[in-house]
Length: 171
Image (cartoon, rainbow, N blue to C red):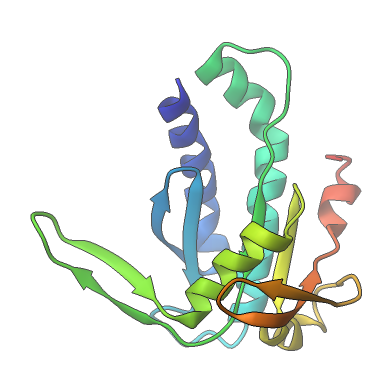
């Protein structure tokens, strides 16, 4: 039942990828890892990545009753998510073993993961300083906060305002 539920959620997110010029890298349990501007140079990659994360959370809020009914046979409750978004360089490649798998590595990946894990409240997107600087003219943010992230030290983080979630009365 849980695997069916995750498959429905990942399918929901996959349907949003093209609209925001993002690519799914992989799923790790309940985590959905994506990148923006992996292949083509897209000047708005920080905006696209942040808006994609917001769109995923909004879609999950909208579709969670149906997903819960279909996969868990449950008529109450609501699924929620959170996201950490970081902008920077990364290393990508194919990992060879018995099966080939594409993956990405680097401090940017670690930063996004730590932002998600340590900073993000439920139904929120938290971004790093560079993402904020590249998207602040398009996306509203709450005032910055200093956070201590394991292995990375003190970083500046910004939480996005969820304008379209409030506009559509999803929360």
